[in-house]
Image 1 (tube, helix red, strand yellow):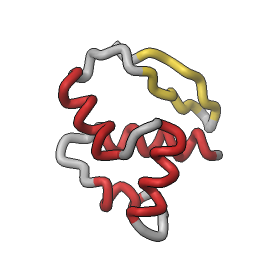
Image 2: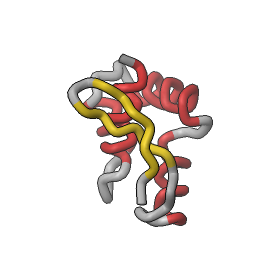
Image 3: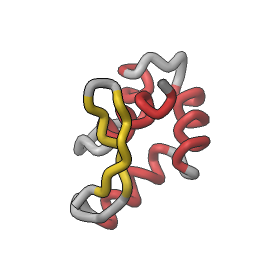
Image 4: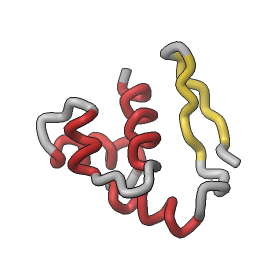
Length: 79
């Protein structure tokens, strides 16, 4: 369940103009601080840092994402 939520967070943060506070709310977190803590625990960086990294590296970077199909998480490289 935690990886599924993380995959949803990655996808939501990849949308141009997405704000971490809005993503936190959409995913059902009580506040942005709880979302940031959970995201940092799994990604090793906060949501804003993740967005900055993705912006610098571009959409074709082989950064690993989780592809969620029928609630089954499978690691897959993007690109």
